[in-house]
Length: 215
Image (cartoon, rainbow, N blue to C red):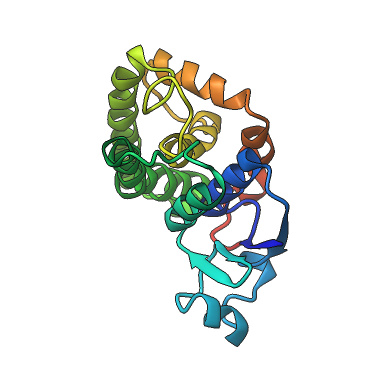
């Protein structure tokens, strides 16, 4: 059976669990990271020398890094459903996945979610937070224009492209921050919420993390 290491409120683990839910894969979830520990143990480091989650073990094939895991699972179990075999179409999915990881995720997760929500009020750097909020607004306005004539990031069908960026939406829309008017992103978010796997694995309340820099 597929094994998955990570904690349910980890942003990167949520991406992987969302796809596992979409694929309907039987799996064993092993809590790890944060208060669960394990990441510095020899057994875990033998799987991932970086000591981070998520990690999966598929009958002896060990994969770490969330986007590598997404691509592996889609190729192994998705039968072209989420990650196209055509090189040109696949590049479109990969572009959005890479952009989400290198641009959108740092702005939403690091600059705003950590800088604002998880940092105690008396330690917040409001200059950096406001810069992060502005950066998020720029990125989501870009996405809003892109989604004006598309249901999903790569057309009318859900794909891996939607998972990294889509995982950001729950935290972004639940934070008490200023957001631009982004009707097409909002409609996309509503479509994602209709997916059972999204509700189960991404829409996990995070109020217990407020003002906490630890796990």
